[in-house]
Structure formats: structure tokens, C-alpha cells
Length: 534
Image (cartoon, rainbow, N blue to C red; front, side):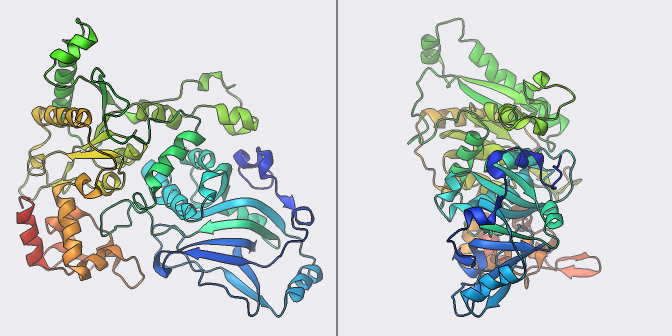
């Protein structure tokens, strides 16, 4: 819902967001734009002070002779071309001031920090979080301590009536969500001025492949942990245990570990049957000890005790919506009441914070592992590709989002055996993985985990390939307009098994041959080294 001014009601409900008349907050302050940028030109983020917006365009006002660094940035994950604000020069600062007086420009001030990004698919929570919000937050982390305080989100979003990710965006920032479409309408023939605006997140997306195969910024900037902790904080949920030095810290030998299998669209009916059989066997084993005292049970058990639940995220719903009058939407309630309303995402966070073992297949289900407590284990059950070839000799194993696990150094990653996955999921393998995970937790694996140790065999193959074949590595990781996007649209499993653009001779797409070069002999050597059957 939008207010009469065109802004989201979640923003205008907050008194702190009222746009301020310039004559009050800008007395004795400069009107000139200044810019601070961090990172290489390829991967930079910029903090703009006094950045103007008029007629749907960002505008820099500066005095001739004053230094401005190169300030082009990428604003979203899938645009390879940088965004460059327009610039207007003045001969002197007094001329800049006269420009405001002569043209009776009295800009509306948008106070505090605003973070800008574009997001095309925010109807999908995985893209919404890790191709939109997370990269923008990583850009903000580069300008500490702003990432620790409330900020506003300005986002270029497509229309979506039921995108609950917009509520997550608003709560995460703390100062509301402002859609660029609304801002454009408000800026026609009118000047606005951002006190501080940060943008430049396009190369921090989860699908922006890195040579080390990690979620960008997750390890080196501690961004995964910061993102997780802020998500819990801003949603009013008690955070999971953090800053453990090992997986066993804050646990006892009598604990019953909590494991959750997350349903996945890539599971077949046979896969689900095998998984449920594994869940029942693990739970029966645990139940068999509960007629004793828990201390005796733990002492007598051959394996650490684990309780496993099978979970559909779309069935996890908020508990207190019933208390809201049916004719009143959440965002129409007073600000305080709105912040206290529990949404479905909060309900999901409350489950995630208590998980010791998180089990699912590739895709959106893997995106939540970042929110797990320190010392947890993520089990990736993998899938079979290509689609519709599952029962042919062309099939191969796929884990997809390995970089999410390697970029989350406070958890340990395990994978269904790569040469066994093509046979379908089997009960005994699932049981083995759950027991391996529980033993690792009680054996006190140290934190942080080495990112490379959190990769599957084909993930480690890719990292070594990147180290030895620099041209190939640049081809699939450097997101510039001169690169063929077919090579940037990269999945490790397709490459390892030489499919589509990686097969000898490439493939035909819309009457165009698509082929990406690499050292094929090296790939074959590494495939043998890592024991990957082809």
C-alpha cells in the first residue's frame, strides 16, 4: 500500500522517515556532492554525500577543480554495464548556491543513509535475499559503521502484489523500503537530495561466480555472519548461538541434536520415501533410549542422539495473524504495532535458529543455511541433471549452491556422495550423513571452517581449475560487457561433465553456436584426481 505521496506506507508510518525541509537541517552545510569509493573499478561501491535526484535521474553537483574519484558502479546482479550519475559543474561554490536561489530550488532532504540496488526476481526468496539485499548490504559493510545502524532501502523492483520479500527488506534496513518507481514519480520537476547514499553491489551477488567459489564477501568481510545477525535482530528474534570457537562449545554430551530435512522440488517420490525411512530409523533409535534417563541414554548410545523432522517451509506460518483485525492490513497499523507483528519469515527464523543439522537439496532451500547457528552442519543431498535425462547415461550429480556453504565459515558442509547420487537418494546414505554430521558436532570441529573444506569434489576441482587455467577462470568470473554471458551463466556440474557450452564443439542456441574455451586435458586430469565418474 502507498501513501498519497507515493511512498510505501511501511516507510511513511515511521516518524524518523519524514523528509526534512532543507532550511532546517542544512544550515551551515555544503550543498556540494562528495563521493567516497572503495574497491577496484570493476568491483567498487561508492558512498555519495548530497546526491541529488531530479526527473528520475541521479545528479552530482560539484565545483570545477574539486576532485571526484571515478564513481561508476553496478547496481544489480545481472546488469554488466555500470551506472554513472549525471554531473553538473559550477565555476565556484557561490555559483552553486546561486543556482539554488535563482532557480528557487529547495530540495527535499532524504535524511540518514540510503542503500540502493536493483532486483528483478524478488518474488523468489533466494534471489530476493542473495541477489538483491545481501549484495547491497555487503556494499554498505564497506563503509563502517553504517551497516550497524538503521538505513533506508531504495530499490528498483518489478511490480509484485504478494512479494513478502518487500517486508523483509523494510524490516532489515529499519528505515523502510522506498521503491524507485514511486521516487521517479515524485521527482518530476522536483529536486530531492540524499544525505548519504550507498550503491555498488552488482558483483556481490550469489550468482556472481568467484575464483575461490565462495559467497562474495562472506568470509573476507565476515558478511555472512553480519547479514545473519542483523536479520535476526531486525526481525525481533533472539539470535542463535554465535561466536562459538568449536561446534561443541555451549553443548553437553547429553544433548539431543535437532535435524531438519527441508522438502525440495527436486526430490522424486522415491527419494522422499527413502528419506522418510531414514528419518524414521534415526528417530526410532533415539526413542529407544528415552525410557532411560537421558544421561544413561547418551552414555549407552552408539551414535549421538538426533531428532529429525521433515519440513515444508511453505507450511511454516506466523502464529499471531489471527489477532489482527481482518479489515486492517499490517502496514496500515501504527508503526510500533507493525514491527511487533510476526510474519511467516519470522516463524521460519525461529526454526532455523535451533537447527543443528540442516538437510536439503539444491535450489532455494539451500539459501537459508546462512541463518544457521555457529557449529551447525549443512547436508546437501544434491540432485540429478540434466532434467528429463535422470534415467539415462547422460545423467550426472549436481549440488549447485556450494558457494553458499563455503562462504559461511561458521557451519560445516557435507554432501551426498557424488558418484552415488545418480542412483537416486538411498536411505542408508542419508542415515550415514546424519550420523556423520552428529559425530562431527560432538567431535568439536573448529571454527571458522576452511572454506575449501566446505566444498564437494567438483567444487574443489573448480577452484583448482581456476588456479591453473587463468583464462578459463576469468571467462566465468569476470562480469564485463565484452564477455559472452553464456560463459558467465556458469554451473560447476555442467562444466565438469562437459555439457552445453562446455561440450566439445559447443551447442546451437537460436541459430548461434555457443562454445566456451578451456583446457580440456586439465579438466580430465582433475576429474580423475577428485574421483569424479564421468
